[in-house]
Structures are given as C-alpha cells and as structure tokens.
Length: 324
Image (cartoon, rainbow, N blue to C red; front, side):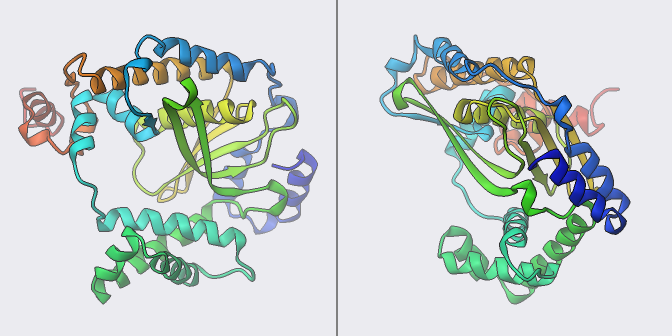
C-alpha cells in the first residue's frame, strides 16, 4: 500500500473521519513492513514446475487448451457432477447476478472518477457504462422493466453506501486497482489458469510481499471463498513472482473483513488443490472416469440437485427434514 509511512500518514491524518468499522478494516488489511515476508526468487519457477509435473502424463492427450478459473476448481473439487452440470447449463443473466456486477463497476468508478460521486450517482454512471457496452449484460438490463431497474438501482445504492461507510477510503498512495487480470500458462498453453481480482492494494517491493488481494462479497460467507483467494494467491505468484502479503474477503452487507496471511505453506496447499483439480478436469474431459458425486453445501445451487438422489438426501438432512 505504498510505503508504510505513506499509509500511516494518510490514515492518521484522516483518522478522525473514519468510522469505527473503517478503522477496524484498515488495521486488519494494513500489514507493517516488519511483518512482510521476503521470498526466494526461485519460488515462481518452482511452483510452475510442481504444477506441470502433476499433470504431465495427461496433458498431451487433450486436443484443445483447458482454461481453468476459480469457479471450475471449486466445482470439480466440490462435486464432479456439479462441474459437469455447469458445463452443460446454458448461461443466462438473472437479477441477483446483476447487482454484484453493477456494484463492482461502482467501486471501480469510485476510484477513478473525479470529483467524487455519491452512491446513487455512481450507480447511474455504472448502469450507463454497462448498457453502452452492448454485451449480454447490457441486453439483459435493457430488457428489464423500469420498476425492475429502479429496484436494482435502489439495492446497489444501499449496498454501495454500506461499503463506503465500512471500508476505508482508497488513497492513491495505496495504488488501488480493480478487476486486475492474471493468467498463468502451463504446458506451453495447453493449460491456462486465469482470474480477475476484485480489488488490490499496495505492491511488492522487489521480492518482499506487499500487495493485498481483496474480494468484495455481496452475498453470505461460504467456506470456498478461502480456497478461491488461495488460488488467486498462487496465480499472483505464478505471474508476478512474489506472493501477496494478505488475502481479504470483505463482506459488504456485514461491513466485516476476513484476513489470511500468505506464506509458502499456504501456497503449497493451493498447489495441491489446483493440481488435483486439473487432474480431475483432465480425467473428465478424456472420459477416463465417471464424475464423482460428493454432496455438500454446493447442492443448494446445483442445477441437477432435483435429479440427484445423494444431493436430495443431503438437502433434506441440511434442511432438518431427515432423521435426527
């Protein structure tokens, strides 16, 4: 987040104007320089080699590149039947999904637009920007009624105001970026790991960690959010060569942040999970095994839960309808 002096100076100069929630969040996502880890420059090639070694027996058998995101890894590591169902399910926009997209656009604009806008003004700017893109989301928003768009505007405005009340104002010295893309190429492009970080603050200093990856969550907390961020930490290391210093999930409704420090043991855990996920994805693509069904909380949003007997049984127990 710039230098410690820059961040401390800006924080102390405006500490009077910070809400208790903003101050608490700032203290949790700001890591003093004496707590930042300096990593071996060989870490990047080492992790790259480990991932390739785990899949070298299968990769030559695929006929087109395998693109892997956090969503695919979460699905295949949770339940392979869920992953297969998601691959077959045609994508379509729904109103709850649009709220998150518009909210993230508002945060992006809040950093780069001057003078500062209010929450409702930012929502209007974000809606205008998205609709002018002419993509699938733009078409979906244009198809909604005036009342539906007004309800979305109201919901996102409230969410954004909560964010402004609980997350510290982002300063230029912190070098904030939004929607930062990352892509790691394995086996000469046959496997591609990809991600896009909601918000990053700070930057590394040579081989010393300094960047914080922040995921902005507009829904409830679920266990796989930690795994998603650990995958992002691995992706950042494979691309930049220096791991992030901290991982943070900020739950906007609650105005609270969950933070995890990044060290090499965390990265090794992410390598094992990612390598296992890649192996299973390759097995499924090559039809070397049938998808395993592993009931879990993912059954709540699985598109085939109604036809899946283990999934139905899990949901009945989870909803208190099974034997106690």
